[in-house]
Every structure is written in structure tokens, then in C-alpha cells.
Image (cartoon, rainbow, N blue to C red; front, side, top):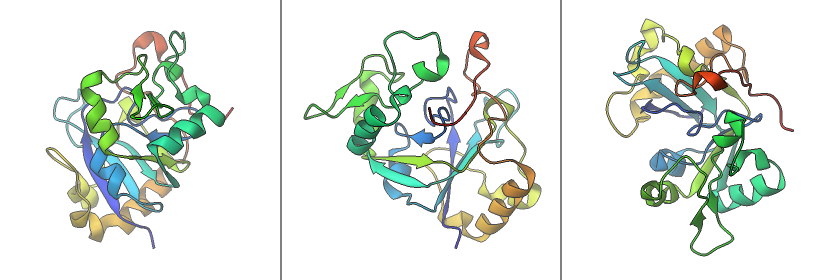
Length: 207
């Protein structure tokens, strides 16, 4: 069984949500409803919005959820296992500055790490998602987003929120297509919003 396929429109692909760096793609901020609903084994994919330079409906990334943690568990895990996901005060490395582990759960209620990409106004929505989705099985094209075949176009989402029920007839074909055309866990393109001075980065493996 291949699981469900959640699709949505990504409006700001800056390497933060999702964060494809350091060997694990993570979705810890934005899309609270998907983070609540999706389970290990499900797929999450995002397509471009209408204002994307190459046009609407191109595939930015797809991931099979391989782990799901509460945001508090993710905070503890990044401290212990992957501190590169915690945004530092100053870093020359864009992949570190884009770290998505930006909420400190040592406090109750949690506090916002001031160096994260999201502002205080985003905090309530981020925390409403409660969970973090993690994947070590991803296809990421970023700013080099790719066309979806005609027979799979119905999975492309338009508008707000997300969908998964209408995608049910297409999940197996989608997974077969992406696995046949692309190598997993490879960064085919940098996030669209990355400044040119930081264009070179890689998913790499965990430190």
C-alpha cells in the first residue's frame, strides 16, 4: 500500500518549509493541517503557484513521510542529533540559516527562536500543526520545478489548503512515475527563494 497523497500550492519556496537540507527533509512550520493529518507512509507534494516564473502547477517536491514527531520531540531531536536544523544567530551558510527547528520547547509555552525565518505573527499557526513530518525518501526540484505528466495533472492543487481524497486514483501512478524519472534524495535544484550568492548547497547526508 502506497499511502495517501497530500498536495498543496507552495507560495514561498525558500528552503525553510519544507527544509530539504542536512540529509532529512522536514516540514516543521506552515501547513498545520497536513502536519496533523499525514502519517508515516503517506506522500506530501507541492506544486507552484500562479506567480512562479515558469508558471503554475509545476512539481517542487514530493516526499514519503518516513517519521512523524511532535514539535517538542523534533526540538529535542535536533538538539541531540541534528543541530544544523536549528537556525543560528549568524551563519554564512544559507542551509543553516534556513533551519526550521525554530521553537524552543524547554519553555512552557514554547518560545520562538528569534533567528528563524518566521515572524512572531506566524507562531500560532505553526504551533497549531503540533507535529513535524520527516522524510529520508524525497524528490526535490525546488526552483527547477518539473512538469507533471498529463495523466497525473488532476493531482495538481489550486487555491488554499490541500487535498488528498481526489488524489486517491492517482497515487500509485504518481509514485511509479516519480521513481522512474528521478533519483531519490538528490537536490535537483536549489529552493526558488535562495539568493544567488547562496546557490550552491546540497542535501548531503547527516553529519
